[in-house]
Image (cartoon, rainbow, N blue to C red; front, side):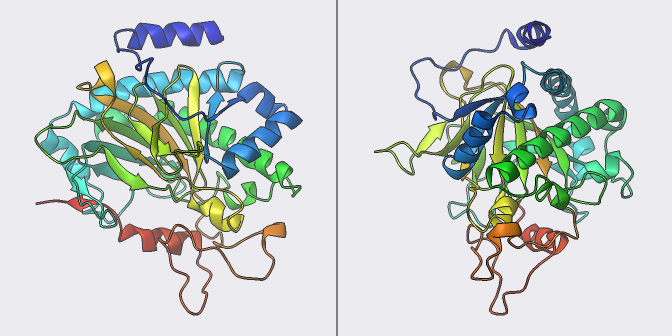
Length: 352
């Protein structure tokens, strides 16, 4: 099955130039999905270490049936992304999520984040497709026909990615000597949440303009599963002598890139890391090519309380999450839904 997946990758992306061999990249851990699913003890320890240091790791999907299915679905979503973003802007603009005050729908490129001090417009557009919409947990937002017609594929990918993310959360719980379901219970698939698939396209930057793919940020959900085919993702270095500098995360065929979001920092009271990352121009010969990525974001169920759980809840002070979300003087405990609404005000907006 791994061979079939590799063949599909080469067939669809064989014309893409390789990541430059001479370019250094972050030495993040490589985890086997087969060993993760088998609850291998060494793998459990490696996942915990990765989530306390870099906050990112590769997950090799080629050595398990579940992983191979996810790679195959991601490959099909790559094609769906290219077709969707080829639609005229006037068509995509009908689904702009900012006008609907929703996280689900279309975000054009040329936006800036209110929290980005550089105020550089981004070169990334995306469609967020909500899990609740796909599985009728909540009324569906409108989407272009090309996305609506792909609902069976989107549902398959969504379910498979969520199940893999839950295995990552179970692994972290075991590593912390906690009940295996302690984090899973905060991220139940069948309950309403902000879980979503993101189809992303980054256009090449204009050298004459001050632009960025996506500015520096941390994710604010629980787990992010990323499939990409070109370089451009960078994370803060943990390499001695380079601490805090930006390092590329090299895309590797058959391997997803995993990172935790701010919710897990909250649940673990800072024991786990939500690492800063950004997207810049693809390096070397990859520059000048449209960069597609397919992402699944796990966010806590709307009623989950954003506070430490289990042994991480010592009754003392709570770690503030990346300076983005203030608990206030009264140390209010927010629900995930309230947290999501608070973060909505930081959504990117068009730069005129």
